[in-house]
Image (tube, rainbow, N blue to C red; front, top):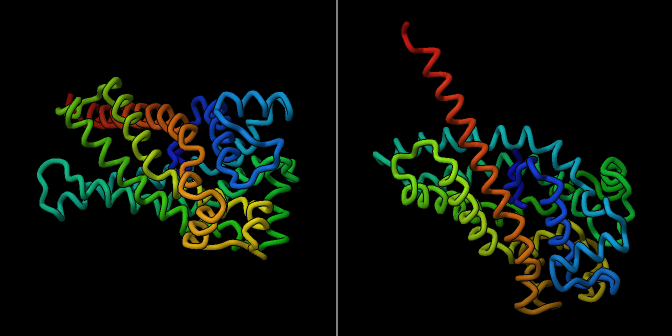
Amino acid sequence: MSWNSASFCYTSTEGGEWRNGIRWEQTRMQSLNPDPKAQYTSIYGALKKIIRTEGFWRPLRGLNVMMMGAGPAHAMYFACYENMKRTLNVVFHHQGNSHLANGIAGSMATLLHDAVMNPAEVVKQRMQMYNSPHRSALSCIRTVWRTEGLRAFYRSYTTQLTMNIPFQSIHFITYEFLQEQVNPHRGYNPQSHIISGGLAGALAAAATTPLDVCKTLLNTQENMALNLANISGRLSGMANAFRTVYRLNGLPGYFKGMQARVVYQMPSTAISWSVYEFFKYFLTKHKLETRAPY
């Protein structure tokens, strides 16, 4: 599994090729001043045009670098979340499920997750832009390191956190709330995990789309957009990104790619939660069985 913010954007490597294609379209559709050859009006239209003009495998570029970072990032993420959730429930003296504890635990876990995934996201998005000069993840890493330094890989880190902390808070609080409604005994119930995970991911994705648009701009440093806004050098900071988006596209600019973002997140979070809950149930059951006296 991989929970990206995208992105958390919380993703799973199961079915990763399809979701990477959707994420690719989201990045392209969030472009503030795209090349005339890279202007899209819908998810299907974007995918069809990209495949026709750039090749069948084009939407899958950047998948390998995301998979490389997914393992360590999410091992830390879920370990931190579970431990923080238990600890905070004790601190708040909450006997059941504390929504505040869930939100804080998810936010703390995001700090670790994004420290690993942010560089991977930068490389992926630069490879996804139209007419990208980078032909492989390794060449992209080398070029960015040589021309912009280590700082370039974390230029959008604070923006990523600004986006992912509210995303994760909304996501976890919604998931745990829905679980209380459809699975009050909190047993292993795949159907409830899929429904709760999908709805939680969709709501969080829609609510944080403006932040994702700003993050995409910071990650890609879109030349045409920066030139149009009379910005020289490199754009940095959430406040500057927000101002630039508004100057170029107004309020509608903050919601570019929202449909693709929601379509990307819903199946991703649904699958990821169901897989996570399965292994949590399996490992817990196995642990109890090994302790049972004979």
